[in-house]
Image 1: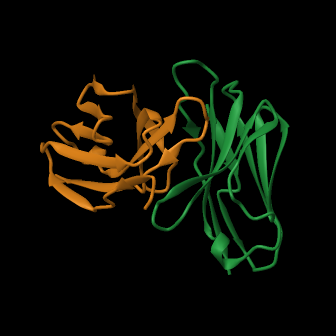
Image 2: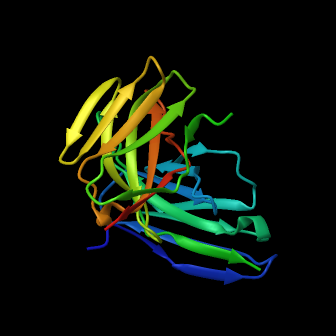
Length: 114
Length: 111
């Protein structure tokens, strides 16, 4: 059973294109996240949604726009792709309980911008 | 200076060794501390979760938090080749959902 799934797994595209990455979780969690992991493995949060509402929006270019159609899905749309956008993008989800906020990560989407 | 500092390694140890992985941080508001393990080309998975200072043990893994020194550690006893992965420390403050990750330490356990 896949808990957090992302599509596509690999994405190779040209500079200037627009692309989307989809994420779905079947864990019934209320909170979902998008992270960017660069080539040095640094994992940085981009966005977080709680029950379809944006709660974290880090300093991310406007070219990145998250969309949450329901609490099980959080998609990431990227406009006008740049070379520096090449990275692995991880989706994650977590339950909203008092003593734990364990994040469950998807397998990642490896984006290469040429 | 980054909020969370972690030696990127790589760290190579022989099978059966005790491994010590460490992170330092600068934000005194951090209260929740986590260690994630990330295998190559996979997403991170939670290993240990601790609140405030103290020790927590789970099998071969022990997490230590020293808030006075702003220093956290993960110890792995009897290390196995299957422990070869990147280990990321992570932490957050009490009221905010944002988790700040370290850069990760790559560990290789040699049979």
